Length: 331
Image (spheres, helix red, strand yellow):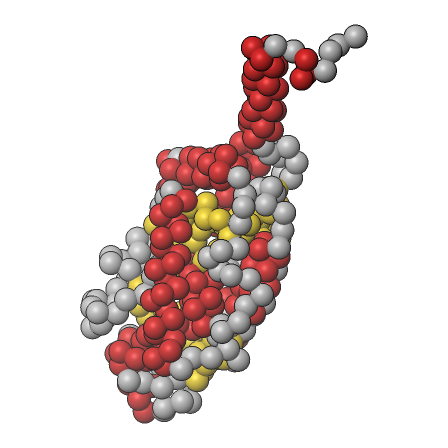
């Protein structure tokens, strides 16, 4: 019969305890090294077809190939990303439910006085994926072919030109608000549940204009279904070399940057976050994906989790001041 532990000499007790600890550590390490063991769901809190949906699906395909586990994109639009964000905030912190977030998430956190989650405390950053230049487009029937002509039309018809956005506080909304602040023009905001339906209504002529990320707008511009007036970037986009930058169009001080990144629920283990960051950065930094993202009009990033966290906090602080200054409220 094995004697109770208390009757063993202290040296033997230490040996047994050390062995027990080693087994526990090995089990934990094995559990982490086996991640992922089942499909992963990436919540995209906007409708299909938007820029972050396009990039999230590209990333999901690559991670599926690397891991041999299905990485599924689950679109949960609404409330300027709050519906999808709440799903992730309440999910088990096991690394199997993630969120592909964007500037809209930070803006919404800055604007909403009360959310069903804390945008900082309820999430663990994984890393920034890409910076996203915005492009200002109009319906082809709109009588403006340059930014100067667009602003002249807006001054002549204050409050009569409608612009689409992905909802109050979304990136397209704030991009236009920054333009209105700088130029003094007044446009009428028409919010949608995502950038894709808003852009579709610009194409159909139901609204006249919108800001959008380059990836979803590019095909429409090339096909002549919308007209691009200006791109918000430091240099012209190679696929649209005829479209000037904001600086070239006369507004060098215009400052708006959108971005994409990945979040996990709070309390997700550092080992899983490290695995996710390592694999996502490897995908983003691969020559093929960098070239593909650049062709889409994106600037590949692939940052650390810590940089993602600092950036998110800074963006919330920045937009909170802007929103308070302009008394922007949810619709």
